[in-house]
Length: 473
Image 1 (cartoon, one colour):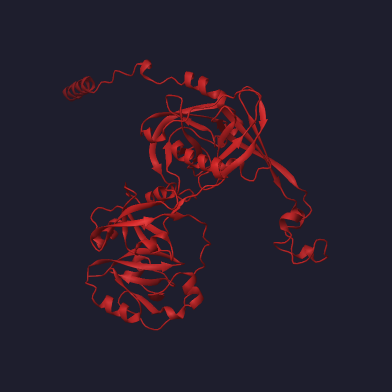
Image 2 (cartoon, helix red, strand yellow):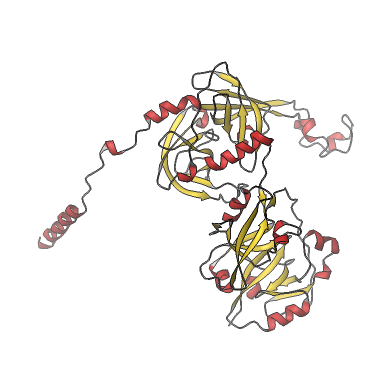
């Protein structure tokens, strides 16, 4: 009985100290006025896409014979699709009007391959839309509708002023439930989404419920200003899981202005492949705190090569902006106008160095083919067999941008396997010492100290990258 009384006393004391009085309902946001004010300018985007006939889809990619040939069936699989007629499918998303003369914003993926686009307002008016232009990398599309009178439009806000924890509101048409309102808070800013072709978009992450059909709709701040274009969810099931991504309005406006002015989008390009700095790599480079973007490859004749960037440089700042993660670099470079001269702060050979560079223009590059390596006879203390890069054909060396190094021909258990080396990799430097040939390789590894961690640079399928090589004690 005494013990129970003691516990009761402790409970009463703790509840008096940590008591929660609750929140007055007047302190909570009310979204009704915002929704009422902004809804007239939020639109539903209906899209018709034309799917070619089975014969049109398949002929040319499989059959070497002309249409109607008796041998054509041997190349057109499955047979039941061959005579399938041309058909049309419908899809859609959301959007919003940004000017009284009828400019509408939505996502590129909403209107991609559309043969017809219809814009519907919440007052039931419908308009055929013209595609002014779109950009796949930014996932932004600009449409235009013509109306008899002034259209309602939304005020665009400053997305740079959005803070983590701010309330935000989305309006859209999830699952064709037109003009649905959802609310939440900003969870993070300048997000890169894993596994997506969106490395140039500094996403706003929120927990606002976004589902299929919300794409292209606006995200509002509490002043009723558009701070972003809702683009995607991150989900393993296809449904909303509490993580939504929005294209920041300041970034989208840059894209829209270029589309209106030129019909296309020009992005800055540096010409390097970069990777994340892990703690092991930071220690091996004596960088200190892991930060920056580690250059794995410098593309030949690129702005980076012309400016003097080197493999193994760690870019700490670009155009005055700090690089904390490697993904920060393409976000910054991509927004710089081509032919602009900027400064970059790099970490090289344990020292910081400023490099001036003239940013180029991003172009699409063809993917490289993998190297097929042969076997060899000798083994070394790293647990690998290496050979001369002369075993790679001159054409492949040129295509993969390989001018020096040694070819990894076999990988056994040991430091190299633990580091992640693979057959076909070309080792170009170890411990920041360039490897031009087999003699250089043997000389460098002979000086590696037991128990040390050193960076090793490899070229794999044309892409340079750094790994951490831990020498056994």
